[in-house]
Image (cartoon, rainbow, N blue to C red; front, side, top):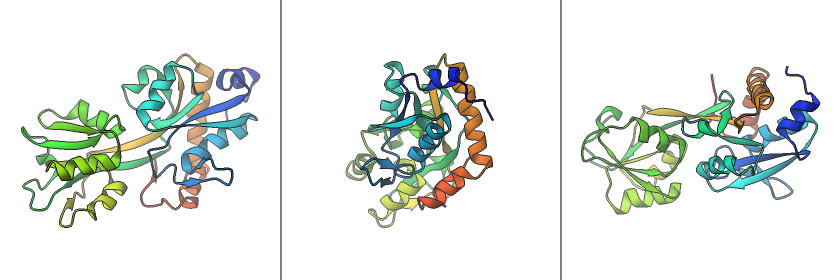
Length: 243
């Protein structure tokens, strides 16, 4: 275990309170509200565990989406951020190893000529996706031929997919399972094109904080903290402990 030194606390929580940036759009990681009206779920509880270990108070700072959390790294709005690790974000954020992961895949409309993930990346194929989600960043980097059509939210990505008669809807499997019910006859692929891995990050240049967060996450997986939170917030089977 990393020693909780004064230097570590000063680097990670310089105001005396740990400010945690929380992505409110991830409905698996933030799926309840506490008795005090604050966001609750796996992500806020991971932040609370860190604050408790450091011996400081916790302040949750909610953001509409992961892109907003990432942007705030450059304006010193938070001390730690609970979002998916991506290369674009790593320019400003040092990420821990992943503590949990969620599969990302595709939904296609009834009678689609696309029958597998391998058939998606073709010229002329249009994919609806929530802008700046981790899987949007992955698709942006990896797709060669298909076109991404971005929407501000998960629900709006389905609306664009449906109303504009697009070829594919990309998303996290648990949300796509819900959205599939809105389009009878649509097909959700069994395969996944990536797994979105959730991590905890701090601003670059904070070496003590970065090493501590890496150690904390490894211990949280080994001791069963992550799995117990997944059970507690009833997201088992939709959220998995990262390997």
